[in-house]
Image (cartoon, rainbow, N blue to C red; front, side):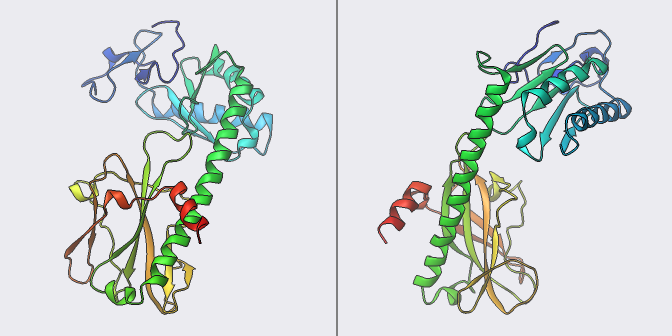
Length: 310
């Protein structure tokens, strides 16, 4: 593969590391290797730090307001870059980063915005991405539009989920009594984000009683089958609300404000979800299993139709 500039989908193995320099190759994780110079060992800390400084200084020369994160590893010479503000993601910045790699000729930079087929790899001699009939500037513009569309949808879906779970609480006069026995599932939602990759997130909202110690929590032991597919939710949206006796919601603060319970959302990979959620009662350590029927899972479109009829 010497001299080639593979795209992210073409090659995700160890980049510019000679496997003959490694003892005990982790072939189950990295079955492919690419190296352009014999004897290239994995990068040490000093080399990684030099690459991070190079990326930061290059971006600051373009605009002092650019905030970039550059993540390296001891595995290979692929560094992941991300930006706090997409406003600065443009052709000029990426070309500057490409030119700067003359000082780190064995490295490549991966910009992965978590969108299908939109990954960009910056090599010292070129910028590679899917569909290169378009310019890199056009590619980045399309990416930003897709992110904007997806973010708008996520915000809308989150707000409609809150409307749904509040209605479930309002419509059941005995719900606060029931939740003392076991957590109650208020709603399960298929958050099939536009353009997002890796998995479709199932968001499960539960109503849980506030004990004098802690409330019921998933204990997060992923080795158990009950937690199979558990994943992280967007940090930009609240996933927990305290609920007072009059049914009003307040953002979670951790402070005691006479809450009777709280609504909490956990995320799962929908393709791995097995139809139930497990909690552990902190009062006695017992595990509580609550089923989530697959035919009750709601989409944004289903919520829109439901509330349209109100």
